[in-house]
Image 1 (spheres, helix red, strand yellow):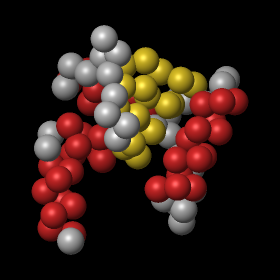
Image 2 (cartoon, helix red, strand yellow; image 1 turned 60 degrees about the horizontal axis):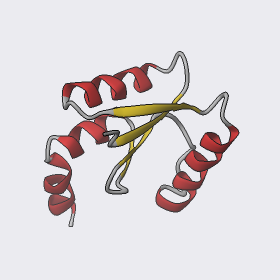
Image 3 (spheres, rainbow, N blue to C red; image 1 turned 30 degrees about the vertical axis):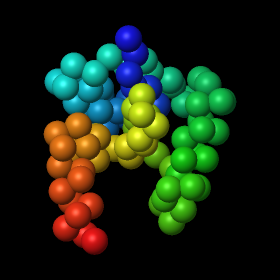
Image 4 (cartoon, helix red, strand yellow; image 1 turned 180 degrees about the vertical axis):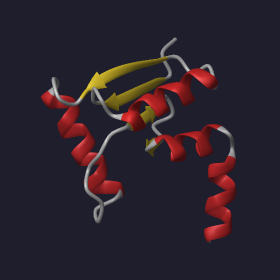
Length: 92
């Protein structure tokens, strides 16, 4: 069962890192290339407009089955390792 979608682009080291994080955590995923799929590119821009309006849209973006959106491999790793909740609690 696919439980994540990785929005990426070829040659993006961060996208390769995000794929490695998903594999390390045994999360089955599919990829969408934002360079060849206009729909995928639009989705990435929309997530940035909604969740990170001050940031420039970039890859990777990972959407997990529960709807959680992770921007970048580090945030993905923190989320999958359970560190995301801890850092959010500390920031609050």
